[in-house]
Length: 163
Image (cartoon, rainbow, N blue to C red):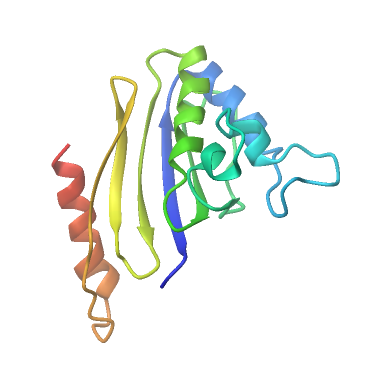
């Protein structure tokens, strides 16, 4: 059984909401939890208010996938990626959205996720404050040279168009 799920997240919000989020996100660390070096862990900053780790995140663990998110003055969009165990970190995403909409009630958050065997892949979007997902499994022919472009992306496009 595969274990890793990648989640790409896009936030569209006011400059103030993006600035607040980005500055806090970019100072977070991940890795061993709880963090022992005093820096703010991503789970402490954006995890849901719950006792059990899985209820704070929505998955067994979570880490920041990419190292290139950045914020600069005037931005109203922010994109980043997370990796988690088993499934996308839904509870953490709900808390992130809650924090964003506390600053900008019109903030939007959407994205896509895929488990490493593409079972499932999905898209998500917050609609009227609720996390809505649409997903399916893809039986990938890995012998096809451009399997991502020809087999995965069309499924993402179809799922996104169904919102």
